Amino acid sequence: MKNNRILLKLSGEALARENGMGIDFNKALSIARVIKEATVADVEIGIVVGGGNFWRGRSNTMMDSCTSDHIGMLATVMNALAVGDALLQVGCDARVMTSVEMREIAEPYIRDKALKNFTKKRVVVFGCGTGSPFFSTDTAAALRAAEIKADIILKATNVDYVYTKDPRKYDDYEIIKETSHLNVIKEKLRVMDLTAISLCMDNNIPIRVFNLNNLDNLKKALLGKDIGTIIK
Image 1 (cartoon, helix red, strand yellow):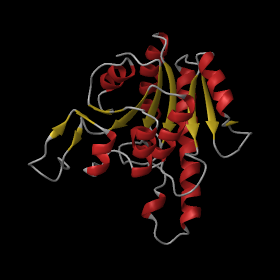
Image 2: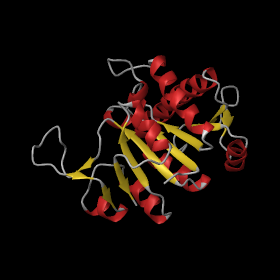
Image 3: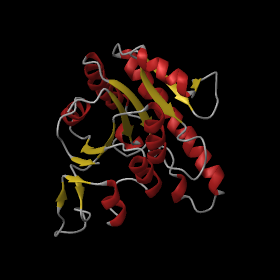
């Protein structure tokens, strides 16, 4: 089923070099080319980018939590700028918007302006998460999806499906191809954090989880093909 407006959640690791850190711009360009193909098919796309390739605030136990999260927000801006530049380089009109104001670098996030960008067939890349500490970029993806009235969230991961157990640790795992938001919460399936899942459930936003390691999967997901796991 084709979705007209999509919120794509990219992790920072999706852009990282082989050592898991920094930005491999060739990866950004490869992702941008697939996104451009989808926009040609009249799909409107917003992107929320994580920052784990630069900073993981929750893993830092010595620093003040708010300060650590603020650094994480800045990390997402670096990734958002890279994705925005990659999109422009492949000929796809794009705008970077940040929920923390930094006018010399990107547009401040204003919902009405984001919606206008969609009507002009621009891809909108959202940086800074929610703009507040203690909220993950998954929650930011759910929040932005609700605000822009996205038809679906596409969560790009490094696994093919959602599983009953971590397939890297257990042999008796089962593949889940379709489930509900409520079941994700009840079974404590590690898809998104509880706040993000609850936001999606309250706003009836389905989530498709798929493996980004094969860029053909991204193309299929953007065009509404049945791939990975659907949560609705």
